[in-house]
Structures are given as structure tokens and as C-alpha cells.
Image 1 (spheres, rainbow, N blue to C red):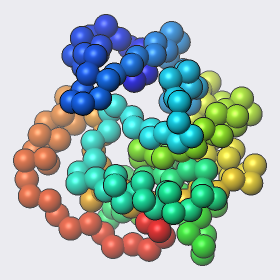
Image 2 (image 1 turned 90 degrees about the horizontal axis):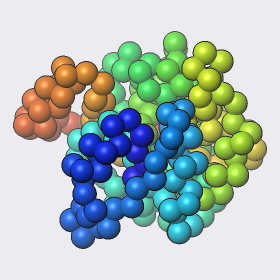
Image 3 (image 1 turned 120 degrees about the horizontal axis):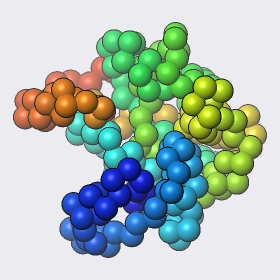
Image 4 (image 1 turned 135 degrees about the vertical axis):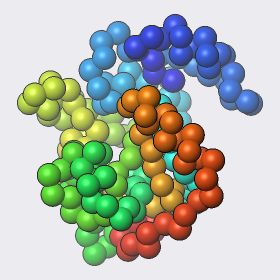
Length: 204
């Protein structure tokens, strides 16, 4: 687990174990975005693949087992990006949008798009191979925030000839940014799940 802001509080709350899992921590001394956090985690990753999960994201009825099987079934994939089909494209503007080609692979990725490609809302829950670390130095920084963004890393991988695909990871997704978001999560997780929007191009 990569920690930065209020790292001590996070480590005290989570502890050294989470169920059967042993938790290791990496301190990100400068809070420079998601890609910098991924780079910081490199020292702890001992497998050929790893699962990226952002701490402020909540997945409703996630399909992680199916996602892993889809990833393992295609050794050509550098990454499998979890997406959630939504009815309102405005929600996609808050995360990132993926343009999926006819073969099911991602052709373009845009962070917080003004005009999303489709109704697939990108999430920070992705399966990745460790080869992605080699692409981080060449990933451009955002001109305003001066940080390397996740969508830019994915686009860098695509431009370098690697294959990424989108996977329908859950029936819904919630992001925690405000107290109101926390209240919405409590309400949403307490209510019966609604059916997902059926869309092609996600899930392989």
C-alpha cells in the first residue's frame, strides 16, 4: 500500500494485516499523482503482474475473479483496465474515457474528457504487467498539474505498441472526494443493486 497524506493515520487504521493478507507500506514522500505512486510501489512488487486499486474508489459488485481470468487468457495484454458502463456520459468526464477498437483493444485514452468516446467510465482498478514500469519515464506530465496521470501512462503504452483492453469490472462505481460522497456510498451500498447498462466493447 502506497501512503502519503496522513500516512500514519492510514497505517494505524489498516494495520499490518488485512484478513489473511500481510500489508506492506511504501511512503510516497512527494504527492505527485497516481503514476508516481505506482512507481514508488515497484520495490514491493515481486510478481509479473499486479492489481492497481485506488483507495478512494468503491466498486459495487466487482467482478475481480472474472477480470483475472480474462487477463490471464490473453498473454498479449500489458493491462486490463476496469471500466463501468454508465447511462450518463457526464460521469465519464470525471474519470477517463477509453476508445475501444473492433478487436476489443483500447485505441485511445483521455483523462477527464470534454467529450467522452462512449459510456464506459474508466476506473483506477486495473491489472497490469510489470513491463509498464519501463514506460513511466517517457510518460508526459499534465501541463497544469505537473503530474503524470494514469490515462497518459496508458496512452504512452498504446503508442509504444502495447495492448490494453477494457473490462466491465462492476455494476457501479463511486469515488470519495467529499463528505457527501461518503454519505452517498452508505446509501448506495445499503440499497439493492440495480442492473448494469449492457454495452459492447468491455469485457472480453
